[in-house]
Image (tube, rainbow over all chains, first blue to last red; front, side, top):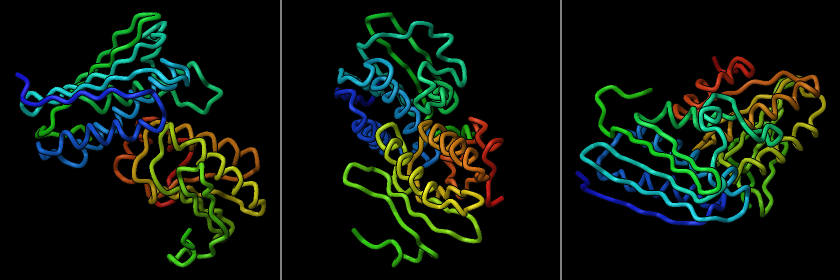
Length: 145
Length: 126
């Protein structure tokens, strides 16, 4: 059951990447998570929002929505864009896969989101956009270090 | 802009920070090593300016035999940091220099370990 909720909507400008990850981190602070957990969440959100700017909208400004749903100590995050969508999600999830190899991109964004968060899924429709859903236990007894 | 040389940087040779740059890069030469210290947050927004600044500093130090990227000034780093380091590694190798990384915080170390960057760019401080 939801006991706290946050919704952010902003343009997919690169300068909003820090705003998004810091806002989500600030939202979690009242649960007193460890610095390691906060760091994981910030990194995962940063990756998801960067994907919106770089891949979904190809550098153009489009709407990005970040929602956080706190259920006890479990934080659910969704990052939604209405951009071009992902042609092959399974391929995009492979480590080091990138459609922009010439831009010094590592192709590790989804791998980092998967590894740093406890739950992760991607839903994408060509021409309609992408939703990345993630969840993180904020007070896990054993942290994912 | 404050002079970083006054903050204890040994053999300070320069820094790069223009108005449109988001990561300040301090540099020093020590024993044939060019030490680059990017300071700030490394993400999609800031990585291009960090790349340009480091490339210019590497080009200005032809005598350096190795490049050490000191990450102790980074307060955040996502996968753009991986691309940044591998890109500089390629440039350093093309110029005949070895490259190392030092002092990542726990979060940066987690990103770099996951990506296998250390197999290309070893830690200088371990």
